[in-house]
Amino acid sequence: MSKTVMEHADASEVFNRDEPYVNWHDETLWFVRQKRDKSSKQLPEWEELREAASGIKHYVLSHLDELLISFEQKAKENGVQVHWAANAAEHNEIVLGLLKQHKIDKMVKSKSMLTEECHMNEFLQKNGIEVIDTDLGERIVQLRNEPPSHIVLPAIHLKKKDIGDLFHEHLGTDAGATDPQYLTEAARQHLRDKFLTRRAALTGVNFAVAETGGFVVSTNEGNADMGAHLADIHIACMGFEKIIPKQEHLGVFLRLLARSATGQPITTYSSHFKKPREGQEMHIVIVDNGRSTQLGRKDFRNSLKCIRCGACMNTCPVYRRSGGHSYHNAVAGPIGSILAPNLDMTKNADLPFASTLCGSCSNVCPVKIDIHDQLYKWRQVLAKEGHVPKSKEIGIRAMSTVLAAPRFYQWSGRLGRTVMRAMPFMVNNGLNPWYKQRDMPEPPKESFRDWYVRNRKN
Image (cartoon, rainbow, N blue to C red; front, side, top):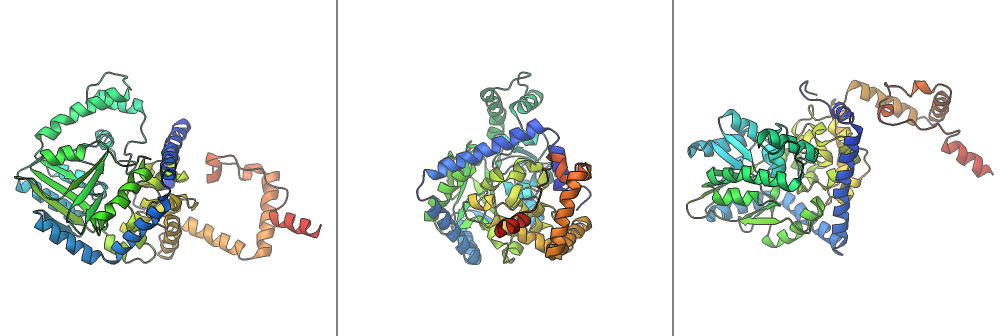
């Protein structure tokens, strides 16, 4: 791990110091998960939609070369300029170059996890470009000078009071104000001038259609539309996995996306962009940044099916009780934990271990990514490549020795139960990570095996 990055377990421990706050975070995200469940149950064909989406994405991953070339050709025919970026640095340089070419030093941006992945905001600001995030949640975390903690709900880790205090400091709202309507209106007035005066707007891309060369941006606030329609230059940035084959496939994904993310039937705005308006320039930046490597990993290529709904985060018991910032990566939670090691195994070796492997993430994934299986497989890869801490490696080897020898396992179990009964302080102390957050269970009088053997005889 890099010395500048706090490992997930350590960051989670910091997050868990405020127990009432952690409980609130847990309950809030579980409420969103419940909304997803209720919304999905309203569609009898829900599982068929998931299967169809997974199948379409499987086709995409097997035909990326054809689909991307087709998309580029159609987009160019529509009057759109297409750029290719091998990595984050190239992506950032392309965006900077376009802004400099037009002598633009101020830009509005709607939500884009790709630009977070590429650390674009910081790069542009160092080069004299002011970037204003116009998604409300993104603007909140930008004012706090911190990254989003969730890919759909960027400020889900904050309460109304936190936002009220922030807006009082930066937007001049009344001290102590926490009314959501009042705070939202203040943000709306604050951003209106930015939309009207910025000549460049950057958006993400939810889906790009190879058949037409068009793309779709899904938002609930309309900020992407405001920025793109008022600006002289519209820059859309996408990872190459965002491609889908045909326009008719959009119906499958749009029905799944919002229901999985927030429980809505559909996002408030599903905006279709195909060509620039008269007098406007439209650019699309298609980015690799490690995706080709992931595509070549047989066990992990399915992670590229992700449509960034965040459902796996909302259901994950570890994410809900550790917070998005503990993942030290643009995409947090279970899906981030299988994407991040592909970018940097050393830096992100801790993330696949931030899971109970309960499988809930895979169960809710709208495109049926085998997330928990990939988390398990990443652990094996990381251990084989030497990215597991020595202490964990020693512990795993010790458990392997115990579990491989039945008699030794039985003896160890009896010894452990005896120690827990006679000397509870041996396990109920700060050196035991489990004891930090929970009470240790009362040791059973006998193991299940002993009970089974005794009762079988009877």
